[in-house]
Image 1: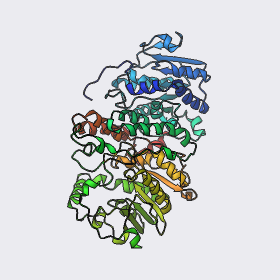
Image 2: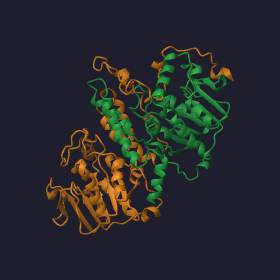
Image 3: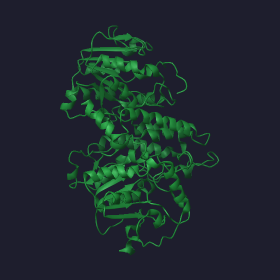
Image 4: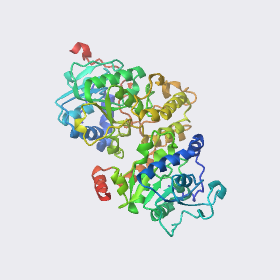
Length: 319
Length: 270
């Protein structure tokens, strides 16, 4: 990384903000995820770091939390958060924040955007000192459209937690991957980190830690980025729509996509794009650095332009 | 890899070049995935549809399969595939293929997206009648640059297998997600489908009601890179490789790329 941009306060994130705005079930994300966690272990006290609009805290309160507290920057007025002066404290999250007590659950799903690259360790330390259970999620690289230095892969965050003696329980992503009530950025990136020794409630339910939680990209995010490919757009929209509707029925053991929803074949990138607009065909766009085949599973027609008579009997004839 | 001496010198030369450059990558996918499946249940007979260069079949042989058979179009000469005459059949994968016997394992990888949607349904039927265990993967939307006909999500293919009364065992991807010597499309799309009733050997593994489509960071970075450099008409491979390296390095520290290290971490953390 050549240059470190200073801590961007509430970086506008078109992908994620659009995702949040589009789903009217914004609070449903919070309610669904926290409801699931509350079933595993009750959390009477909850602290959130980088609380944007405190929607996580309000959802926690609705689920029975008696004490909620938010820390974050003062970008937004207090009224937006709906918290009292005893419940919200403006802080700089790039410094370690010491609390006078520990909470049953710490939440940080927007906070990572408020710290710069070099302070990521401090943020995780703050979280780990605040609670033995941490619900954490952050933007993956390029989530904002640019490569911001404070965007990291899940593996990299997991390493920072591991340095503090926390292990990842990757129980949320698989559970909610198809659940459209939850905004896709949470389905893609929200993980539970638990201090070693504080995992009995999870163990009792048969959950195991993931030593190296993988970075996964959700199809909804992928489709949103791909929306920028004009030639592919119709099919992209159809496949995106299929994906959004798929989860509800499929996880219940349905037979998958109904027949009438099978997308028509797309003409493909190559066929549709007019050569004047894009002189070089995409055929080379995804090939390896010097045109090697390592990204391709099988030789394509272009590789063996001349059909070779192999003299091999057809399937029927050989029997 | 067996030496390729086909009548298509370009392909042979390309393969030899690729192998010289990246020896580690050689058959890593084949050996890892088939080795894992073979460890759960030994396979004696293996059939592959769309077998290409037949690497999967030859690795299956290496692992103890006594009978292998490949089906594909006649595009490549038999010598390039390294198969005997009896081990290969020319077939039109757009049609349902009826076999005279069943095999222990059927393989069909990264082929289905190149067929028409109707053929996709027939292909899954072919696979399900060819074996009780099917190792399957298909390219997801925007993965291929070759003008895919039937790019679809994993949920779609799982649905087709479900309607043939097969269970989805999504047990391969998390084993290999960080192994960069394996092409990312196998890591991202491979899934084991097993006929209901033929899954006794998979005790200890849970079938997924619906294996989710998850996009690998490598594909994500590639798409972003392509979009960012669209006007220049060439991707910036330096940026792509450094982005990829950053991802894999992060994974390596935690042992994600190495199953042995990962197991040690797992043990230490419980």
